[in-house]
Length: 185
Image (cartoon, rainbow, N blue to C red):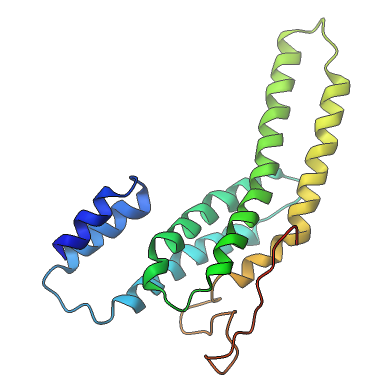
């Protein structure tokens, strides 16, 4: 346990790692046979947070996409850190999670750029930023549409609730149900 804690402390600091180290410290000296299930429960909770924000998604309000993205990042990082302990997790899914997060990130990047442009235009009324603003408004609409086209991929990354089957497995746990391909999906 001490060796494992040292390993995690050497990893780039992040909230998921700090939480995991605190959790492992609480487990010290206790039976940890059920650790994989406890880890899955922790991921279940993160996924439920993402899904809760996903339910509030409104394509007319890009900030709702950003809210999903913030929760998704925590969920994804938890998967990345714990993936070596989650032997059944499909490695190809990690690549798709990155792409999924990028779609949401593009929306946020354009939104931030648009807001900065509007602030610049307001501070410099002698400049006509309207043509540039319209261009980025169109890019934002395209980025939102692109994410909305792929948004339901979220359901492929984890089970809907504890005790339910993982989406990448059929009833027979040895047969993959999902082939991961997210190249521009």
